[in-house]
Length: 258
Length: 295
Image 1 (spheres, rainbow over the protein chains, first blue to last red):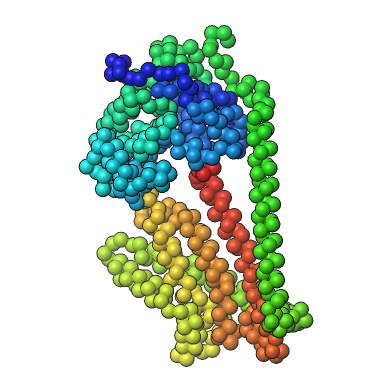
Image 2 (cartoon, chains in turn brown, blue):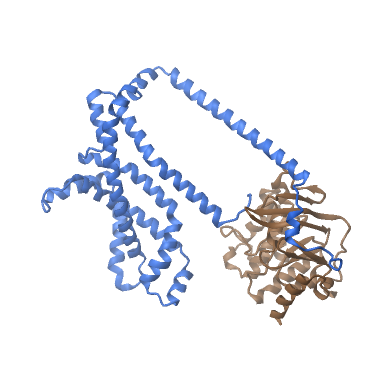
């Protein structure tokens, strides 16, 4: 934990409130009433098996899916209200996907500055300056003018993170951002996430990296079949799981790793 | 249960569930929004139609055009002959479609061969597609329809057969390129996986690559099929009494152009089901393949 000694203290201000959210694809009920609050500067990890609803929950928060019931509040504003402008809402939420999803027909710098230019209507020069500074910061300052396919997976994912945070979103959603990476490249991406946490970013991440989740999270949420089975501090969840389902899941994941 | 901070039982969660007031309000709001949008679109469509009708009916020549193109009398009069002609079109379409499917697949396969030994085949296939995509269909019809009988090699040949062959030759060149694109679109790892199982090149193509390739290109293939459906009308230049020719004859008899409209209507009626099926298929596949959510 000493790594995070300088991390900004979490505040009492709820940045994201998920209230009794339900969501289904046709007959398949994916979320069965999920409640979750993420405070400002807080890092919350979602763990659970594939199909437990982690990704769907993130997609609902980003309004990529329409929920069937419940409410989601971003910084106190109900973003599930049909009157809300979903484009404006999404502009305030940064998302990083498992497969980077960089735009292959644009240079790295254009990828990073696209939202600044087209959504925030920033001038080209200013956007480029901020983009360059951001790329410099994440250690790919020399790659501004190359195309994404010339970067390693780790570099691509860091650029994807840069693209998500350059517009100063209120919250950052990370959807299994290391799952597609070569193990040797995972570290450089996770280091960047630690940096973000230290700077006070509010983050929700779905992850299979248990040790990382344990290390960085302020709270860990275990999802099972669309329900929050257990939530607590990393110590509670990983050292003293209260629920047999949690225990079983962790045992299977961690046994296999050892 | 008190030991556990949250009661976990999915079944229980579902049983207790009643739609919340917030969600009901949202649904009401969305329904109203949809209602509004439908009203606006209906209204704008109505205005559009009224304007078109007004402009047409006020034009000075409208009356004459109506008489020469949309005469109910000549419509009913020529319908049986034109419809009978359409049967010939359908017959040609049936055999042409089968011929195109076979020939184009062979050409596409020839073009994707890799080995240096097969260079002549590849070259032939490439020349074929280059050549016949460049020649207008009308010229191919003339060349085959009048040139082949001119050789005098086969005795008298039914022009319907010649027309069908001309269509097959022309369309196979296009369709082969579509199928080739499909074959190239199947990820090379699929080929690697199939060959790793010990399948031969032919088996790999037939059992693994082609089925995926064809599925990928079904929408453009259907598009070509619709194009073929109306291009069968071109065989009329060979003197075949198809729908177009039958309409022409009726026009010549009466100096009224309504029979052409009859033929057009019949061709539309013929292509409509295929167009709808294509749309339906494309939508279904999109729905299945990607859960892209609401954006």
